[in-house]
Image (cartoon, rainbow, N blue to C red; front, side, top):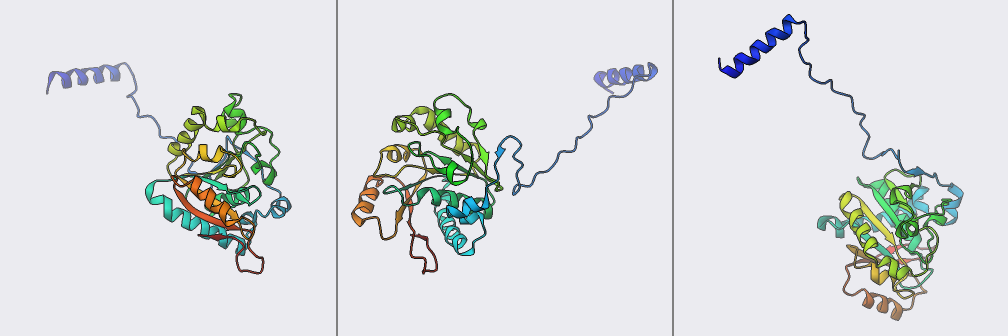
Length: 272
């Protein structure tokens, strides 16, 4: 027996004579298991949506409308095929012109991904000129991304859950003048990078202003992995579509959505 072993043995005998208890291993604590498909939003404010409000604004993936869901599920599937293998998880949704349905597309795409895919989705309203996500979802919140960028509120205090598992929303807040400079700021770039890196399996969908209306989308497009361009069927002139694509030519355009097709057709949304 070595000197160290003898010393340990003597110490053990002394503790026994003194009535000292043997040191016990710390007890293992039971840790509750939370399903990855049903996350608990303990720190994020949950605002359940009003069904009639969603229906009014064509947010159909919340309402189990098979025809609408098929269209967005197709869009989701194609998007995942073109991004997942490359580790691309930050996607910007924009349009050529105003009023083509980019925000509705962004919300429904995020909802489709959250409902059917084993991952979480963060939807961010980066259309700071005209933030509409909170309105379409019926969320009575006045603060959002603009408040964070002005240094007034932490991001964690602005996130909301719209009553759908695996989906979190960062609303835009109040409209902001000088949005191009703010979106192009180092603070915004760092935030996008943090969103991308924190949870690699999470997709982050950004709703941005139209490309031909403001320079915001062109500035912001340098931060994201891919761009989806929304155009309105029968309304957006072909030369405007070409112009929008030309402006984004050095970006990764992963697809084009033709929105608001004829109701008589099987699907009112298409993906190319």
